[in-house]
Length: 363
Image 1: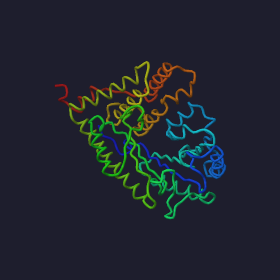
Image 2: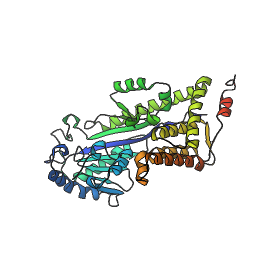
Image 3: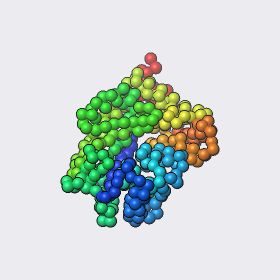
Image 4: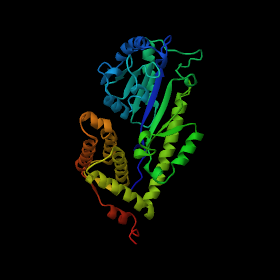
């Protein structure tokens, strides 16, 4: 049995990049005419960017239903602020769906860039390239120091904020998250549940993020965030190893994994929170060796299970079946997860795994 590696703890990274046009009122104080004037300047330039000519999605917010907005929120492709916007506010999602452009969010232009990699450098380079291209045709608001001006003066700087998403089931089970929180505060970083509306540890997913970064400090802060994420990942692996190699705690861990496996395989109805928690424990069970997948590599199945966090989300399922009741959605989610177990041919022998790892466990 093993504890996993960096990739099974660091789920992915994101960068938020903001820019404002000189001479235009910020969206929060602007009129509909003002927002339209900003959109008329920014949209044509965005749509000419490589990858946006065949954009996967483009819409003005007034044309999106409540369900469509919630789907985009579940995917983290738009912000809560953008989900509430109306006329004159637009989104463009590029062809690869790894970059979202929001026009007239809190700022005139906000970009969300996503990556499955654990380091931010590729995202930063991409963001800088996009901003340099846009700056050839758009005049961005800057102060005398060359800092990007924002609707919150205290956040003026490079206009970049970095995020790392991590899955930390062992640290949660060991009740070590308060210690992690205190350590991050001292390192000038923040942490929050990825699914904060469902509780503090839904799916054991957390996002660690920086404050808006000052001009010239992006690479240093990115390296700092990566080093901290690696340290937390190492700590997660250490705790997993302790849980697996100790007879008493191994029983707790195997019980959690077996309950998750049983829930996903045999339940008739599944609420979203219990579904993603069970998926997380199933994923951990695969990494630790409690669960096996015939004919499929561990890396591919671990990544595949992670996609179900989004696929089973409430508004993703409701978008596919808009007239369905909540009960019908829960029934469909349960069926979806049963298909996952069957499709990947997942098998398990928890008691055998316990005896093999700890011969004295049965005593």
